[in-house]
Image (cartoon, rainbow, N blue to C red; front, top):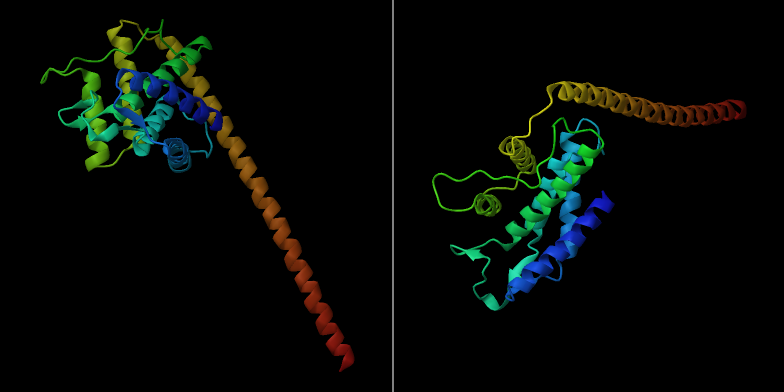
Length: 244
């Protein structure tokens, strides 16, 4: 997790630098790095501990991307200098952090998708070069702006939900395959499903065995402590009896 977090922060620095070069009014807050690491750890642990069958289980690319989005938005990495109107402000809504979060998350997710495809873990006949977004029907905005506005309002009025964001990212990925006319290989999908089940059962079995060993170790230690205490009490009673 630490390696992933550090890599993502380097990507944030680079993307922020590009955004600030294009818009001189953008600034990066000095405490943003510490806040990002703190928030990334929080969301990663939250999903891993509360919603995975096995603690510290490997998280998929959609969950990692959702953690990136939540961590960046909670950290408020970018701001506007001198309270002026930045080009990142649309309809009086400052969306620089949302744009940063979405770009970094999608880039990381696509990179992980490519890695999984290379090792045969993606049941499609090919890969799309970049994510494809649907066209909004009720407004003239780009769909990426719709996403950013949604994230902004979610943070301001509701609560960021990493699981819902991960599900949305999965659907965006699936839509991109469909829009790119890349077919899923059903036989390969079934094969990978069997492999995934096998790996999951093996991990759960390993986790159970490890937990049983820990319980056994703890039980043995407690047993020895109780036996020693019993022997001490018996010896004390024996001495009292002899002195009486």
